[in-house]
Amino acid sequence: MKNIIASFAILLAIGTSSCQEQVAKKEQKNAGVPVEVLISFQKKYPKENIPEFKTDAHGYWEAHFKEKGEKYRADFNADGTWRETENSIKVSELPKVIQEKLNTTYALYTITEVEHVMSAKYGEFYDVEFKQKGKNHDIMFKKDGTIIGED
Image 1: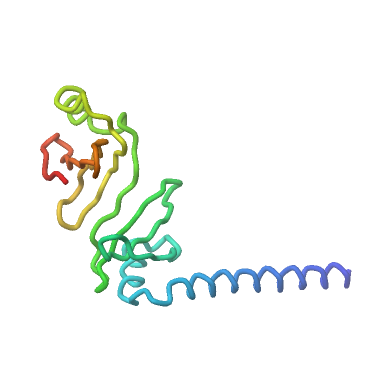
Image 2: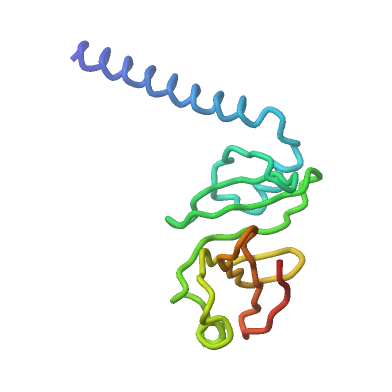
């Protein structure tokens, strides 16, 4: 019995130590992240652990995380203001009106990526990226098929 208790205590100590190491590594990786960004993420996604943050090409603080098995990316300004959260989807998951527009108006273009986006500025929209020489071309659609922007 003493051996079982001793073994359990050792396993518990190893597990706790390993868990503490993981937390310490994550904190170390997020050392330069503004505390406002970390707080905003936790408020927006209270059920999620704080992921590792990196700055993207636009200077926003970007976090990659999973929610209900889906991969997401969330962007925050340095002051903690949430900008947007997006996840990749299939063309078949787009609203039918957007699919129809793609099949008629954009039938000659090759789609490289489709994302469902929740944005502080634009609300909910879908970002469709087309292959193009040089920089790819993005079109942002509202749920009803209205184009709200291009890049």
